[in-house]
Image 1 (tube, helix red, strand yellow):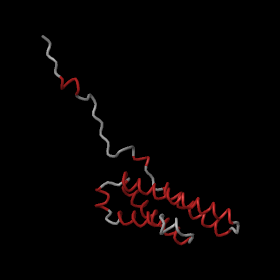
Image 2 (image 1 turned 90 degrees about the vertical axis):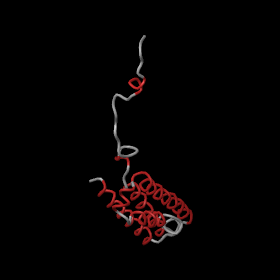
Image 3 (image 1 turned 30 degrees about the vertical axis):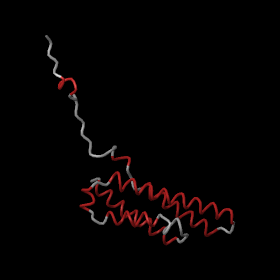
Length: 136
């Protein structure tokens, strides 16, 4: 009679360890910053034009890009940063909240003021500084 040891059959031969959902290289606050710079550039082009159709398209693009800023920030906030990061950088939740609001209806989606776009870019830069500190 042959005795089978099921533990040996189903036990993994190699154990892999990972510290995040995907390789960390897929996360980068530069994506949010690029979209925020696009929002600002669209605001500048809007202000420089007198063509109503052009202005209408500029607003649509600005709102779309603002939504992409929020998306990229949310991915960092929810997927990259872990509880240990929020413990070490207690201002991080507030930074993300402020940045996503600056990209929202009360920010760049609802305004054509360059100062609002500059504030958004500054918040993204603060988040990026913390992000890169966590990669060391």
